[in-house]
Length: 388
Image 1: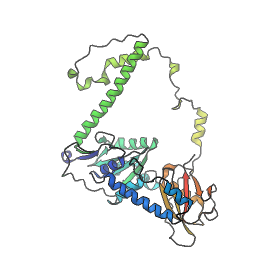
Image 2 (image 1 turned 30 degrees about the vertical axis):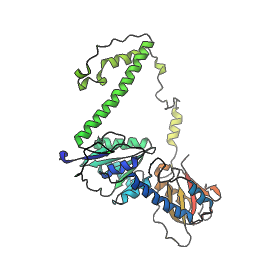
Image 3 (image 1 turned 120 degrees about the vertical axis):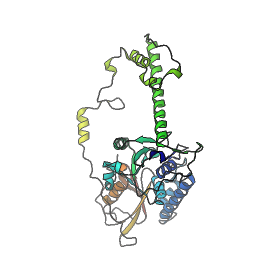
Image 4 (image 1 turned 180 degrees about the horizontal axis):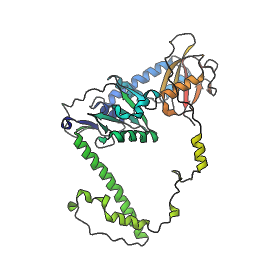
């Protein structure tokens, strides 16, 4: 029954959204910043060992040492590699929703148990608890309920905004709240579903009230400046106003905005085909852009060849976001196979990434060229630039 369900939610502290995201996903204070920091250090050490095998005097190694960690930033933001490593303890994996292997998860997200979302160094999770979906974004004061119908639309909206979304697969640990904290000290708090709904509603109404107040005062100022007169009702005692008599149904607001908008020319309104920066996009240009062909989606790169085999080389590949990938290839494979592996591992990088070698620095333009003919050797470091 709903009365026995509790929801664990952590509010944002510093840049520790990765910690809050994992704890909300697992529904309990399982990880701290120190825990994830240790995992980041372990991953850094593994990458350092790999890079040192080409020689600690090499230019690639010196550049690697000079760079900041790709697993944790100075302000405490953790990479997806750190979050994934932490979840492995619970037998959980994270797969990018753009990966062809989880196309069913994108089509029917309500059948999954949880998603992790990221944009501009902010992590949060969506999770199902007792059959109901909740948004555990640490920027919210409380978990926000999501209907199954809205879940699909919400995820689609996030993807359109450029979010990286990962479906969490595996059996989530059981939720135990025998020692649930009752104070508001610290970022973590337990909510009943009803408390979460009420706090989410109050927060939403407060934001809406703030927006409408700003619009009201702005409209009044403009009306006064233009010499217009707006008749207002006598102010009521705030204690006598019911919940339904808030700013969203206030006639004064409508009068003020109508007064400020009165007399404005239709020519001031942007055309329907205007872009966000105000420029007008012609229909022929838009249609030709839409018709532009896209490369085929990446395919599963398959199993790696055995280490130490004839012609087998291992490559370290650095992505634009600082993430590092490592994989073995046969040197008779084409450059295309490396690009396919990059696109498959990081779908958000775009359809046409650019691959660059470091020693000497050069761009690998010919995707059909074999790796050995492109001059790639074992333990070579490559960098990737996103699609132009």
